[in-house]
Image 1: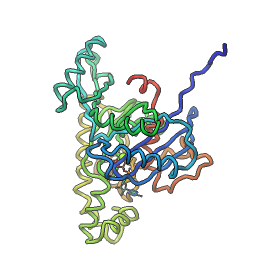
Image 2: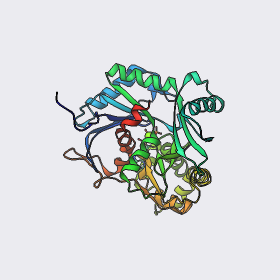
Image 3: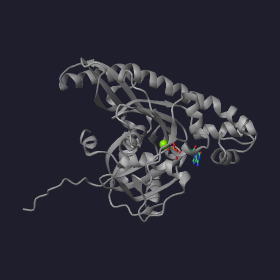
Image 4: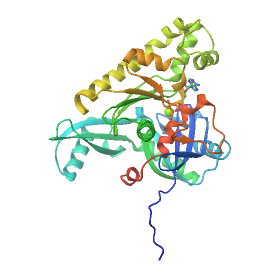
Length: 358
Ligand SMILES: Nc1ncnc2c1ncn2[C@@H]1O[C@H](COP(=O)(O)OP(=O)(O)OP(=O)(O)O)[C@@H](O)[C@H]1O
Ligand SMILES: [Mg+2]
């Protein structure tokens, strides 16, 4: 019999049905580098989803089918998929528990979920991860739950398309995976990730793993609306100004800044709240070293400087391209569109042990 000497990962691709765009990426993993084998994105049809649940299964399947067949660069070679659920649709709890056996831990997690999540447990899928506590006498446990209705709707879309749904992760968990693998993180030096989507801005703090998550109920769209209001222009014109000038220096900078300030201030407040939690509960004395921005809205000019000034933490758009990720012989997207694909890449980097754990 032929012996298999090395364990080969079964290939999979990441699919992110966001509020604005649907995107996918398949990677070919090499030891320290991944090559994009296939990718694509297209606008989401707002009628397919409600409160995170895909309500029109056949229309969503049509959309994904169109994405994978017509809006694709490269070639997809697997039907195994990892999908994302928005942080705002997941319940995350981080609790301290005394040291206990795995069986006791499972009951404690179930109890915590029953008591702290305002949805009957029978309507939830949940999972947990044990982290090291600040002191060694306790366990710090991070639990994530999401409504079955959401995941079941994803399964229904995949079934229609003949796709095999291997795993569902929050978008920020996927972003974290990407950063951990491809952002030269320094040990003991936590990072903040900010995912600027259309409807929400999601935040995570990570070191060796994702520790804390949060979300702000504002996004690229509310930034555009705010700019449109203050300059008395249409949404389309405001969008153009947002992506070309943003809040970087320019004739209308002060006006635009005053419009987006209340939104970005919410992000700053949430980042500071999460850092305080992290420094008090997860890793005393650790100092956050960087903020990385991902998501379609990452490239708004001036956003990085705004966050740097407000938090005094160096901020930049995550850019693992070149050194860790390349497009090989596939035509790459425009530079401004690159950050939109980062969540999908994180999904495509899911580890077998994460999948096995479900
Ligand atoms: N070059 C750019 N500069 C700034 N913002 C941009 C740029 N391109 C797209 N955007 C903004 O990015 C947002 C969409 O980002 P993305 O595609 O990541 O959202 P999504 O994942 O569908 O949304 P969500 O995560 O909220 O479900 C829109 O608000 C859009 O205006
Ligand atoms: Mg998104």
